[in-house]
Amino acid sequence: MVSLTTKTQRYKVNRAKHELCWALALSIFVLEPIDPASISGLIDSQRTYGSMKKYAEELVKEMMVAGFNNHLEIRLNRAGFKFYVWLNPDLSISGYIHGDQRWDHPGAYRAISFILKSYGLLPEDRDWQNLP
Image 1 (cartoon, rainbow, N blue to C red):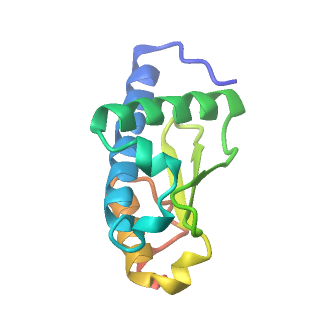
Image 2: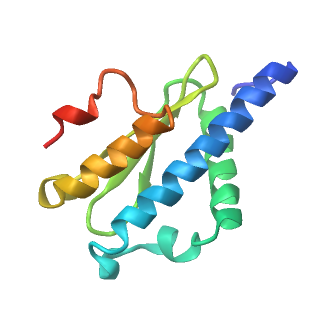
Image 3: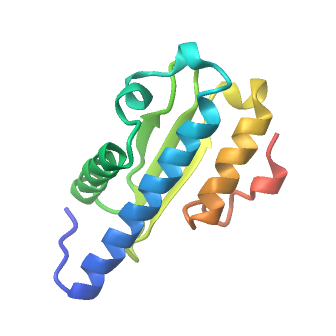
């Protein structure tokens, strides 16, 4: 388990939580028009910023219990978009999108990867320009 002892550490985790919250919200915004029938419970119940913020807080708590570099899988929809996130030793959060639908909807895959990159969540080794 990761413990936060300084004000700087708490600030970093809160900032990462905020970035994760917005990245998830925007990812849902991209996915919903593509296949509304496949939208799972996550998207059905997390439509407001407040509920998305609460969900991001729960994810960060899970990451802190799991420790550094332990991946959590989040299913963005029933049809196959998966979002993998983890906590880095510098208390930032990294993540990437994966799943079966990346081949069927490359535009959504690129858009979500770009969202992750713009929020600083996409790791350097996963360049969004070289995606399918």
